[in-house]
Image (cartoon, rainbow, N blue to C red; front, top):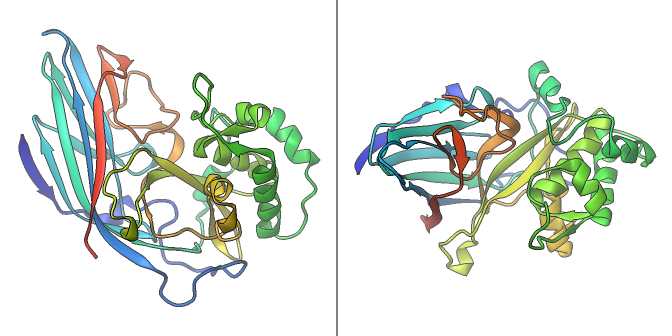
Length: 325
């Protein structure tokens, strides 16, 4: 495969939380001075087989960008054909695209990440606030989540209201992924009824509640990184978290599914994130470039494949890290 190194021009691809911070977190901020950080090399590979000589294959994989919490350097792409890397048309981040007719598609991407723990902060633009109050397809207005939000008594600043919604979500839901159930789609209405799910379900439910209380939110997808102490290098699957916005404290993060799995850290995960993660893509109802035949994607973290214009799950994928510190 052909290997290419790319120099990233971060300024053109900053995510919604990036920019010059003009607001400072104070409520439950875990870090003073320089927060903990780490450096690692992340690898992301995808292999799509061609079943016939006439099949048209298309492959998209997410490519990260710099944010206030991470910097991305030394991106190397090893692909068996031409590819393009473009900013998402709708959403935050980038995607690598490849296509072929009757030929397997293979790509391996590596990049260096400097990731910091964070309590958030930074001002939002008017467009970011509007986007944060918009209803994605899987977090609709006027349904069960809206009714639930109306029943929750929460007063005070947006941070205080968000904390009440955080505690409500922790109390109502449990982290569980039983076979055959519809978890993992980030369907807030389903999560409201089922009262269980994975990180997408937890944070979609929280975001729906927050929007009904007039609090802008952001949805972020990435990967959990094994701690340096564990010595692990393999990554089993994705992770996601959310941010909410307060005009005085800026964008504050929450990781409610991790708080459910680790109750001893529940206080920390309201307003703080550790350094053991990498962000790849932000947003919901994402539109890639070039656009898939399916149009907008509910979420985008694993390789997305279409064969003759129809989504296909016939692919292999792998992720891993090498610690650099």
